[in-house]
Image (tube, rainbow, N blue to C red):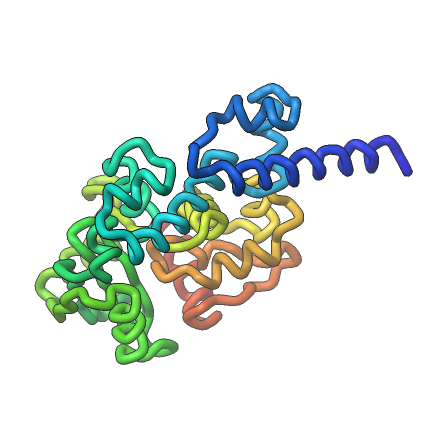
Length: 282
């Protein structure tokens, strides 16, 4: 076995040990130093090594475990404070931030299965066909083109995600967002708030997509490298295909390295049209 292979094996065992430590101890919310000490590495070296092997930072991995544990506890616990402390968080505000970031609802709304939450949606024409857009008062949760996904299917998914929330069809409320997304000068517009619902890995991929400049395209390999996971191109493709915020999170700007257009959830013809439209505007 070559020296590089031996080192890779050692590194993998360290990360495996670190992941196990986080899984066993996330309820006490160990610090980066505590985790690094457990595998006999400096904080700086461990953080880089973990991100390289696991595709996410140690802190983000721990947040994901904490959030998933808290989801179970919220459904079983008598109150939010109990779930907060059982999850190892120091305050209910930390649990609140965790859920708003990764679940698009507060812990109370999750526990109540969205009861009291209002989701407004509208159906509009865009330069690339009819779309359905949905949002809560905290931001956009869905943007999907309708030719490949029926209105009924999307509404059913929204109702499943926000089981007891009130769904309201309100084109007047959602129309200004469509205008901002497609027809206004983006540099002069107010920032659009997105609510990303997904795994740590998916959210990391979607964040990388948001950094691709308007009118430009990159390869799946580029995105995999950007998130520190160069061998995870297939997983990157799966995460891109899970994007529920079409066009806004620009998965259409990712092509195959060999020059192929690659897949697109809402059809490759639409993907080509969007790329051409953006390049012409750019």
